[in-house]
Image (cartoon, rainbow, N blue to C red):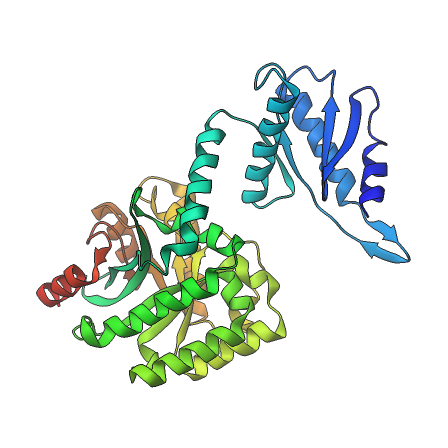
Length: 370
């Protein structure tokens, strides 16, 4: 396979491609010349991506690959071969981090971001053992009355040096390290423990985000929830799991079966960040889905963006026709809430009510505002 890729790379424009060398594993270093500006560089990188995406025929089998490309320029980004390779390698890593099958140009801030990544990676292995994680809660309220109808559980990492680290800084790294099941189970266990201790006055459900990897390995998730609900004597119908729209792209029979099993346990299923994924709308009628959460990117400019208004109205109409509950996240202004009231969205959450709170403060808030 490696030879096939190398051979194909060497068929590209020889006026531009001066050297192809295998570095390690499935990584290649390419020295390119005669590209005069960013547009030309980007066009050449797209040609390489297209070239790799064409099927390979190996021993009668058709094999499809994709690539991630990191680009560094001499002398803009480095003046030695070693430093230039390091810069390109960093850029390639960021291309992978953003989903792969793309190219990324090196920027100076990547060094700092790479240092942060290594610090998080090294600390994450021991963070669970050291009990550095905690769960914050944000109320979910009725759009028309602001009555508290439930909450969303949000993991935070109390890092000894970095302070309070939000999940977007470490969840993807936990997935890469194979830790996401343990981390996800810790969150669910913490929520089930908090329900009888702190959240007795919370009338509705607690929503918990589930990684796409947890969903794809759903047998473990189902068994864990059944065991935890039984041992803690908490009705699992107090839980609502949020799954990302993109995770439904790989909707195998196993995934569908496990979603049905979760529903049979009384657990509701909602699609988080709705409108930002790539899967077909057919899953809304074919899968056991109870609700949608409108992504905050559509709420942010809702008061004055006609495009976002049209998208939100379309989501609300679609949900009504399918009998799905809709929650708008990231609501921060009265104007945003007024629009949601006008078009009969059921629930919302956001800084307009309160930012996420530690469990003790959240319990106090619920007691004051119920």
